[in-house]
Image (cartoon, rainbow, N blue to C red):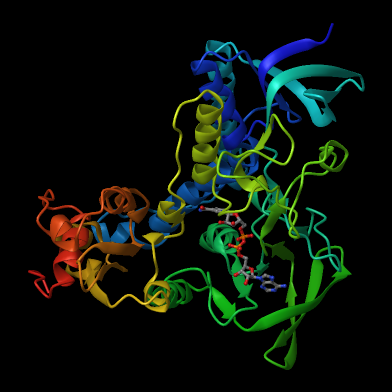
Length: 467
Ligand code: NAI
């Protein structure tokens, strides 16, 4: 007889492990099929967590070089031990993925290592690491296989010189010149890591601005600050070819708004987006519908076109963000169990972990205007914050948008130190339909960076105190 479960989750990333744990909490006998030996998916193994470990380490290195002296901390010499930095990153990953394995044990979730695919009739086939296979049965099957980097077919990533985000986390030397194709989140985070460690970094972006999804004012300020840090940008530019000129050298041919030029470099990072990963998942055979871009189609209950099969996370349309995937997964399993799970997709925050950090939630100014809102804007620079000056971290600002008629907050956007943490206040405020005045009248501890939020909220009605 086949092993049988109430819930089988295929994929053990942020979506998958959340689905399995929430299922177990709600009393479902749960299994999670994951083809990596470790749990946590892209995020924990080769994404969010290792990149944040390197961002943290490289920021310490840069501070030791450039900032500490201004605090009166004089270091005789600063040396980079790259091997140790990379090992620390690997240790952080190992501890974090082991933590999820511990949670699985605690919740009595079966962790099946192998590649799962739909076999029809509530069955999942698992190709095991030893070459064998087994069939398991589940009343409910949740697909959570995530996404993979988009390759450029003319020069696919070899992870030696032409890197995807995975390879860029483990370059064994500091590149002399790293060319980043795609000025989005991954390109700017990983580009920042290697620039801080000493690389020349050139970002080639097809659009006329970096991170085109950001509020315009934030995107412009972000580019200005990164440029000041030494990152070079070629905007409105397309890469025509990447050619290996020797074992260690590459030639990148670029079309810059109609003008061709060539750049010599030793590493290329391709970060032009991610696509849903459903290779070998048996979607077609099982009759699961996908859309033209390869995303699995689901209804508001995360149900696919096949009864008993659900899909969540990067595999379904929506922002490809770990926290969105986690919320999808919890809501999906709660609905399976008759609990009223819910995700407000208009309030999924985003963060870019460069220095300064960038974060936002809700509508951008451009979006609010295009949707017909009369918008009032409050904007407060960190330069005017006592805490930011004390920290020596004065770049950036907080921008809050409110509806001129009702004062209801429509969006909040920020660039500055630690805004990845500050954004949560604005998510909560908008979630509870706060007005700008509500936030402006909320007591914020002094001196804190979050006072910039209060000031920006005051700015919506021209009442800022410190400006
Ligand atoms: P992205 O969509 O953020 O950026 C890709 C950029 O490449 C865009 O600006 C696009 O205009 C540009 N581009 C596309 N084709 C190009 C070409 N041929 N030449 C030059 N430029 C080109 O994608 P990215 O950075 O690869 O990230 C993938 C996904 O992972 C995103 O959905 C992102 O949100 C997510 N992610 C989120 C993180 C976070 O929340 N901090 C961290 C890392 C990834």
